[in-house]
Image (cartoon, rainbow, N blue to C red; front, side, top):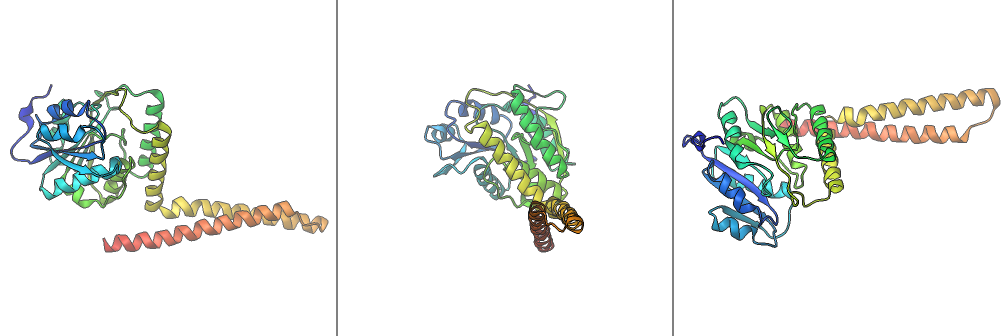
Length: 302
């Protein structure tokens, strides 16, 4: 175990922990975490058990949501509170015990070198580890690959065990309230030119480590990641498929004209394909141009 002496009074360090119905695990998570940070913020995301009460009794600052906002919504509330408290470094970890609080100093040691803005704990780096099932690993790798296509090279885009400088969080305009917040942060950090590093960590999955079905969870992540990628590169994301669709439409139109020239018969099927493909192509290209203009204007004003 890394010694707690790594925590220095030169920095104000706060842990932000979103929690939903984690009364069985929250106490051990807080007892591990408090050794390495100056304060802990637990965002009780509409729990109907004793999660908030336990956290409060153990000295954490508890922010209670009336309803369940979701992982992203809870984390954003914690970020806002941490920024208001002028915390220098914000550490995030899960409340279900899957992250080892004794590895917090590994993240702190890296971020306090001063050459990065965000440190991501990766279960896939050498020296790290995970008990993740094959389907979970495959899903994480798909999301990580999509984030890499967006220009951010990491090995574990879905890790919630991270450390941020206050500057990093103040630089980002975040909106996602679901699990997609993890990828939104990385994509927008890359867009802003923030520096990201990874350190190896270990993840342990218990029976109640996920409150959402894997299918719903995975679909939510993919759709949210695609949304942010489409906004970042609208000309490629929408314009390129639109151009391809238009080329296909022209090809079928030429084919139709050739058949008509030879037989004086119009192929209805080919005409329908040409019309459909051209409609889709024009819609996609129009969408890409409109989004590109909107995004360009927003970036100029930000």
